[in-house]
Each structure stands twice: as C-alpha cells, then as structure tokens.
Amino acid sequence: MALKLVHTADWHLGMTFPSFDADARLRLSRARLEAIDRVLGLAERYTAHAVLCAGDLFDDPDPASEWWEGLAKKLQARRWTDRHLFLLPGNHDPLTHNGVYSKSHPFRAALPDWAHVVDEDNYTFELSADAVLYAAPCRSKSESRDLALTLPERVPGDRRIRIGMVHGQTFDLPKYQMNFPIAPDAAERRGLDYLAIGDTHSYRDVTPDAHAPTVYPGTPEPTHFGEKRPGHAAVAYFPQDRRRRALVREEPVAQYSWEVLTLNGLEEVRALCARDLSRHVLRLVLDFRVGMDGLAEVERLLSELHGTPAVHGKAAALQVDRERLELDTASLPRVLDDAPDVIRTVASRLEALARAEGHESERGEYARRALYQLYRLVRETKA
Image (cartoon, rainbow, N blue to C red; front, side, top):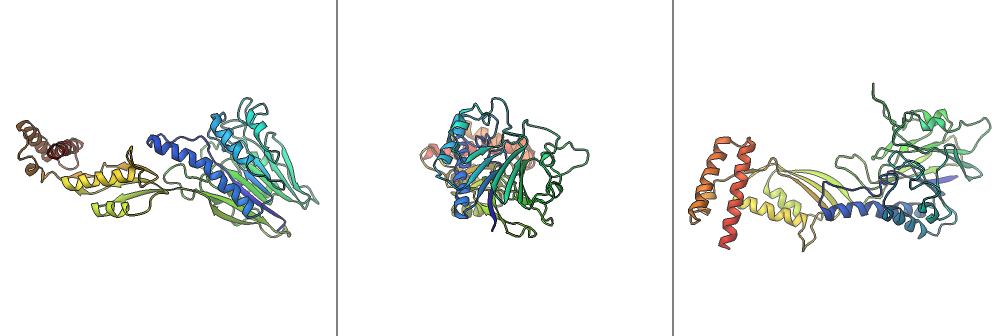
C-alpha cells in the first residue's frame, strides 16, 4: 500500500444530553471523549500514515476547557513520530477569531507537533513524496459555498495520491438551501483519489461506483436514537497503482449502542432485564395492559434498568414511554377492602371516571394512574 489513512469526524465533544438524567448525561458526554482513544488506536493498529478528522470535533466553537484539555491530553499521550493528525473546523466548531482553533487559543499550544489544525482556506500538506492533502475549513455555522470545489484541480503530470477534506452535506433536496453543500462529483472534478467529509452521523460511501470514494465515517459514538450506522471510523488503503480504487473499511469504535424497543407485555420486560445492557442506551415503549400487581413489577424492573441513588442501573441510559401502558383496575377493590373510608371513596370515584372515559381517554388514563398511586400507598402502609 502506498498510503493508509484513518478518517473520522463528528466527535461533538462537549455535547449534552438533556433528555436523560444527570448520571446518564455525564456518562454519554464522557463516552465521546473516550471514543477518541479507540480511533487513535486504529491508526496504530493499521500503521496508518495519517488521521483525518473531518469537522464538528467539538459541539461548539468555544467549548469548555475540560473538553479541549481532555482532547489535548489524549493526543499528548501518543508518542507518534511518523504519523500526522489533521483537525478540520466544521459548522458546529467553525474557525473563528476567538474560537478553540484560533492561533491564540491555549488549545493550539497544547497540541503535539504532529497534530495540525486546518486554519487556512487553501490548506495543503505533503503527506509524503507521493501523496498530498488539501483541505478547507468552515469559517461559520452556515454557508452556501461548496468547499470541496475550492480545492485545487489536478494538473497534468501530477501522479500523486490526492486527498481532499471538507465538511458539509452531499444530499440534495429540491427548493432546499444546502448548508455547506458538497457536489457528488466534487472528487472527480478536482482529480482527487479520496474525499474525506463529515457532517452526517452515519457511515456512508456517497460514491460507491466512482473511482474516488467520497466517504462519511459517521460519528464515533451515537448522538440520537434513529441514526442508521453511527459508531464507526473509516480506514482507507491506497494501492501503488492509482488506477485502482482505494479500499475503504468501516471500523466500529462505539462503546454504546442506542435502541428503541417496543415491549408488548410483562414477560418481555422480564426478558429484557435478564440481558447484559451495560453498553445499551434504551428508549422503551410500553405497549400493553397490566393489572395492579403487574404494574408494581413493571416499575420494579424499570428501577433495576434505570438504577437508584444506591445501585447502578443495568442499562447505560434509559428513557421510558408509558403513553401506551394501560392500567387494569379490576383487582383494586379487594386491595382496598380494609382501607379508610376516604381512600375507598376516592378510589370509587376514580374507578368510575376511568370506566366512563374509556381506555383511549387521557383523563381516563390519569384516573387509572391515580388509582395506582392509591394502591401503592395502601400496600406500603400495610407493609
């Protein structure tokens, strides 16, 4: 092989996860920085000549110091002498006068000499006598200019391996203003052998039938439910014969997988709790009807998954959608037989409201949930 590269993007260091509880938010934010070690480890495992980091490495242009200091420490820990790493500003972390990539920012002084920031519009770096990198940074959060087409064209007689790196969007929607658009044939038009891009969080070879691959490596750790192929980096191999297409491999690097699961009964909740879920971020949709005792067990199992102040949860992070969980109150009267009169009166009225409203009514569901709270209070009192 004439050249080997590791291509990564969309680290989003400093990203917060407000829809999760405090412990999960910290865990998921830290995982983004921890993933960098696995990306850098790929470069060492495959003896790559360079690592290309194609934008949105931070979640905003001026991240809190723990994020840029954390990244700098991870880079300082690698004693590389024959490998380069390139940091490209993206639209989330554009190159600004006072941002993390500015020459006056302490992050720049903390970088080892083999780590380079793409801080010029016509950035060029000779990777070797036979390979060259061209890159262009984002200087704002939005722009309609195609940065890939600002890269220089191949001149006659240039037989080097030419690598391009930009950040932007390759999809095209009618009447939609693209943010940092990238033409699908940009690599061909500029005579590149590989176009490293970032922005989309799923791994994708945009041009599988073209001579020059245009590749999104995806984010190394998922950021949302529903992302199709997150959690990867790309490793690209370039043969001595430039007439042959570069070989690109999709390499998993994520610590966590994100799943949306619809559970249709108590047995499925029990089965889920029996699994090893320590590396799973879950959104559970509860879609079944359950009695009072069954609901008590559901809540207990969900507590095991989520964790308590005293015990770690079985799942790495958890969200629960109870909108479709129906409560059957038929067993409530016998539970409340010896309860105080006021409790039985309230329960009777709530039960009547639940029956009158039906199972599709929001008011009916509130009544059933209030009944469940009465049930819990009576049980706890008896215990």
